[in-house]
View 1: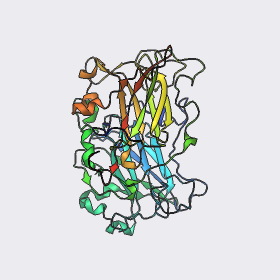
View 2: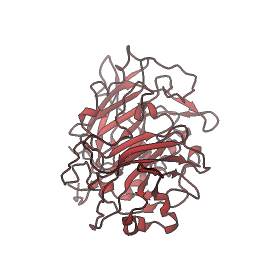
View 3: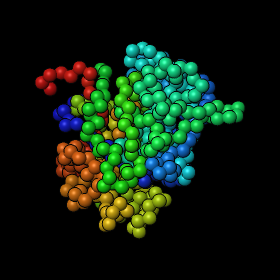
View 4: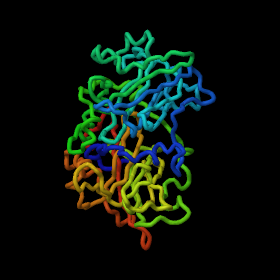
Length: 200
Length: 233
């Protein structure tokens, strides 16, 4: 169906301080979660990783009322969306996760390292996860990307190349010591360490 | 059909730094956002089926042991793209205060009563035409700490997905004629009056159910337009 052409999009408004019981109840409220911070399903192939970190404001204070959402390709670089026409062997892998930060501004996602996805010219992008950041005090969510350190493809990534060299590190999750594949990715909403956000 | 998502459409949104809403001062970027072309990562988005929505998730008045207190209302409308096409099978989540203006969230300390029969959370999936419908209670206005005697106009929070990750929208639906509009820095963070009006539901007498509930219509327009727009539409 088609209605009269709208004047424009519905404007964004802040998610506010009270979204948790509706969007991230996590057992604390009388409501069930639609989404979780664990993207790994029984038939998901690929390298299991954890991405964790904290969210900070412009004063360096932790942000305990932030919601983070991630969207990513599977290990073969395919998206669980019919708009991506290629076959999906990971039938139950959805590629989407959501979490609310804890009292220390902390979060973690358990997922798999995504494969490479082509840019509009067919050039491979380095493995990355798309991140959306929502919070009280944010009238419109911010988009960022999580890349992985030690990844040779980062050097040729067409999106990282758009970012001033002295800010690129804000987009690269750092591998933590130890046997498990844990990457740290802090989000700084503002200031000297500000995470790069994209105008998309 | 391939949809495109021009960044020009973002002009309707509020600026990230809107100092009258004080929390934006330390939570908005101080450095320029980096423009980039959309890749498949931005042009695709999560797809969830009907299994994510349970039978009564759209009716916030039947989730407790008894009926919640307050004015029962129907809130319905279409999720649309920028060309006015319905966005089918997309998840619509909402959350809101109760009739007294109190959220069940643990952080909400407004001294108004909680309602044991009202959580204030709901979800629905748009149908093949983009239509969605909720039954709920009209939320109350409530005070907040932004400035002296600050009150939020009654509103319902909406979270919608759409066709791609860049069509993602979190917004608030307001009620027509609210006297608090001129004083609310969140509502007025949207600087264009026509854009602001798109956040206000309209009273819908035609779909008001006699002897049962008033109805409000709220169409939600997400980013996304046909890559090759036709003339004279």
